[in-house]
Amino acid sequence: MKKNTPLPPLGAAEQQRYIGAIRAENDRIFEASGRRPGAFVQTFGCQQNEADSEKFAGMCEEMGYAIVEDPAEADFIVVNTCAIREHAEKRTLSIVGQYKHLKEKNPALVIAVCGCMMAQEHRQNDIKFRYPYVDFVMGPSSLHRLPQLLVQKRKTGKRIYCPEEAEYTVVEDLPIRRESSYRAWVSVMYGCNNFCSYCIVPYVRGRERSREKDKIIAEVRDLVEKGYKDITLLGQNVNSYAKDRAEGYDFADLLSELDAIEGDFVLRFMTSHPKDASRKLIDVMASSKHIAHQFHLPMQSGSDRILSLMNRRYDTQKYLGIVDYMKEKMPDVTITSDIIVGFPGETEEDFEGTMQMLSRVRFDMLYSFIYSPRKGTPAAEMEQVPREVTAVRFDRLLALQKEIGQERNDALVGKTLRVLCDGVSKGNDTLYSGRTEGNKIAFFEGDEKDVGTFVNVTVERADAFALWGKKQ
Ligand code: 5AD
Ligand code: SF4
Image (tube, rainbow, N blue to C red; front, side):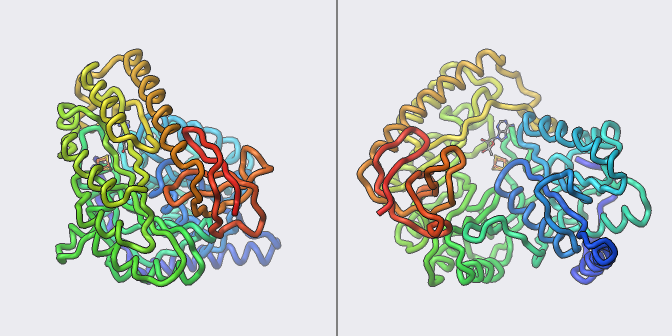
């Protein structure tokens, strides 16, 4: 999408030099003032972005910053943006707008805007012309360049618009500052080759590239040894893992090897594409010790005509085949999905197809989105469905899913489930909350020492989105 000259790869030694340079400066400030400069990392978007932000925070820490929770206390702000829908982009720009007054108060403040939005030329231009106080911008594939760009900014004082990488690579061994001490993300592959016609991801995150399996296995083993209890393997297309490596090794093989690691932990993965959801993968899950019987399998639409316009490369029959096989092999499986309402040209009949698929599959939960045109994608050029029509369909979809979700959760009443406790519930501080193996939220009367451990909860009641029960 961008026309600037690409940047050459950045070696590990050079990377360390840049980190060291900033660290020396921050150490000096600390010695002189007794205060460590603060870094604030703000994340929008998906789990991949959350995982990337843990690397931003890890690099900031290595550069001698203290991670702070309040942007007003920061000397360095990193905004990690999302481009998936317009709403996410608008929100981000409005937050970046609010940082203007922080820069006025503290002219030494450095503001970096990173992530998927910044891999689009028109969004880089928004920053260039409308947010002159932002110091540098870069796309998600350049994440490891944070220290380099910071050094360059300090040296030249000039704003930087980081160009695309010369080649999309996997950068290993970046420092990670994990948000949790018992839940962890592990990226196994980056990018996407699918070019679904509505989606910006392949344009902003580049082509699929998978990490070496030994690196992934070592990372998961290390996490388990450190006591992590819930580990999610991440990729835009996680079950296409290793297709780019052509080593005759696939995602199911990786899962089998990870499942063999000794310890008390649950393994999950997201997001899967139905075209790569093989029987072999489901067999590995069904016979595993550690892999949660939970599958997030975006369907997007229940109309074959729309699926074809979306370039999804499966039809409803194929989708149902996967779901039926999953239910046969794992009767306790939790299935969730993504649905887009109002894709260009969606007729009432197409939408009815989606509603019928909901009733047929009976998803445990849905993430539903109103179609949002993304500049540069084929669907943005197609004839759009009027907003009023989409809004009505969206409400109908939510209402049907609410009924199904309620029934699915009611079926768990009386059952005892293993729940990983997250702490005092945010909405109701007399209860603790956690996640079941199926990744459902469960509330119960807990204890501070339950946090980060598995507890058994007998479900007493449910709504469409959560369970309430008694700890055993
Ligand atoms: N408009 C609406 N939803 C979208 N998604 C991706 N692109 C768009 C878009 N342009 C949804 C898909 C995907 C999820 C992460 O976001 O359902 O699975
Ligand atoms: Fe987007 Fe499709 Fe790739 Fe998912 S698989 S990231 S929806 S292009």
